[in-house]
Each structure stands twice: as structure tokens, then as C-alpha cells.
Image (cartoon, rainbow, N blue to C red; front, side, top):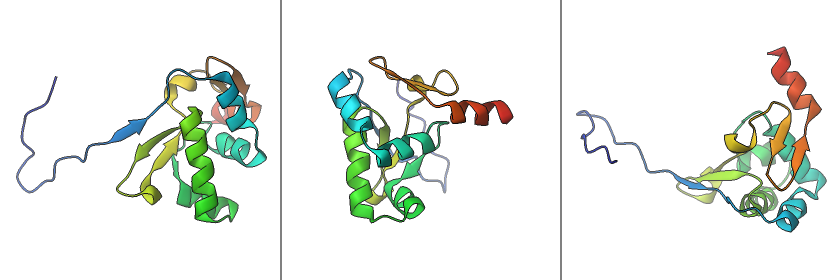
Length: 126
């Protein structure tokens, strides 16, 4: 159902958001995407629903944007993380979709479960 109500005068309508999410995960592709110390560290950063651009991840790890962006796209294309496309590639926001994070400390991809005990402790402590 569409909302055909025009925006209030003086306000801009919200920009459309494209969400990229793979729903039929291939186990080989998922395991390949998780087979990297760097990508594993990024997954842990996002375990509680945090959202990051590739630029933010690059700054956090002191790595070049292009290399990090490639890794983020690989994870997104494998379905390990989702991405909301911005106006350009530097504005794409990456995240682990909530459907995979139903239990604190556990990411359930259906084809495998990733246990992150530190993430569970962080939720319990908040």
C-alpha cells in the first residue's frame, strides 16, 4: 500500500532506500565470506546491529577505503551482511540484518550459526 500523502510544506520527502539482502544463502559462499580475519573482525563489530560505511570501517582499521570497500561488497554479495545504498559507494551503509541476529551473541544464517560470546556479554551488560 502506497502512502500518497504529500510531504508537509517546506520538508523534503524521504529518499528511497535500496536494501541489498541475499535470502537464499549458499553455504560455500557464506563460509568463503567468513574465511578472513579482517572480515571476521568486521562481523564482530556489527554483531549487535551496528551500521557502518566502508569509510568508517577503513578508518577504524587504518586501511585504505578501496580495499575495505571490496571486502564489504564481498560480504554483502555473499549475504553475510546487508547494505543500504547511498548516493555513491562511499555512502553505502552495511549491517547484519536483524533477521540473522534474533538471539544475542548468535548470528544465524540458516546454513550455519556464528556464536560471538563477547557480543552476548555486551548485551547482558547493557
